[in-house]
Length: 196
Image (cartoon, rainbow, N blue to C red; front, side, top):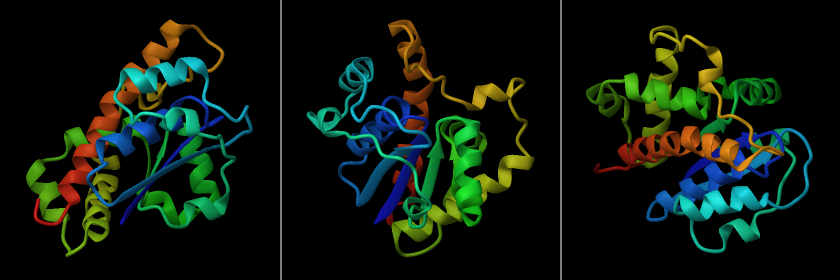
């Protein structure tokens, strides 16, 4: 079983959207996806975030069942892959559990590194008989690219913009950054599947 964890600020917009979309895209795989926030917010997803969930193909009813959670160190012990929605979240995760630095990325950083990686290198890194071991090999390779792949001109390009309390246009912008990155994560998880 592969465990993925998404983190944002309030756990009512970005991280639950990433969680629910990954859950839908990987529904046929032995994958667990959860999320939490670094600060407290109202317990339910915002109406506009729920609208994005429906627009981008999450499983029916998932958005209504979501309840925001406050991030704790215990939540970060088991996941194979941890995705912060912005650099501040990645920093908070690594401060809580420094041993997870190699498997913690911002969502868009993960997308950028995965797109820069050679498919043959990713396949070579995916060694082992189970998906979790294979994914950890891929993540080690992606982590090693951090110093070798040219970073974005603007460091904020590794972040998904926070739409909380903002316009519908900002929600759409946030989704335009988040959804393609989620699709790349799903592709990498599929690559980790034994027999791929």
